[in-house]
Image (cartoon, rainbow, N blue to C red):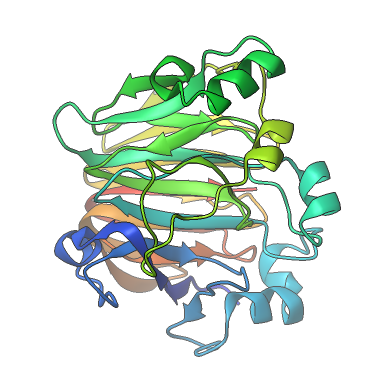
Length: 315
């Protein structure tokens, strides 16, 4: 197969969700509390579906299991990454994710979760929680038990275009008024540390996972510095945000034309802004903001024409 694989997302309602996925990307969301668009996902909790071409109607996991040549025979028992767009209409819970070893032992074979965020848009003075101030596990436990959240948690001001690398073990939370593209390991394991005493839809407080959270939390907090590498061309700009053991993430800003070689097992592409065309093997595909597709292994040269901004990743 030497054509792109276009996919439709799955959507997930959250108590902190809103309507920006509809307002910005014109998605048909299930409610006015839609928090997550699982844009490219082979995870069983929300799969992407192929919307055109030879594999129309198949799930991404079906492609992964039955057509490994599309992905360059990448060695993994599941599609390794998950791309989301998150609408944080209200504050998310303060949370932490386990690494692979802990998740394999305690979460029935689920993977750990290292992720990263690209801030698509946010309100003025928006912020995230990113890290904590405890120097030892005993200090961490004492602060949690005494509800010293303002002392414990580190808050960071954000603006559109910011990028954050969030390895497993990092305490974090998106703040209200934030629209984010998230690239992560294909995992749905989250341990809540603090949730502002909010009730669930049933009226009870949402479950916390303090014991597991403390076990996996990195203490003291260490923020890995991300230094983007920018490649300026006449008609496009490529920014490499992170090259990690789990994923590499880029931003492609196409001002007119960008011609590249697909030299990875596969590439995951999300169109965040603008519109244009994708040329592959003399075939032309119109693309617009809110679309998501995979460039499989057999594609070599491709051309993007137009004016648009895309986030791209690969394992």
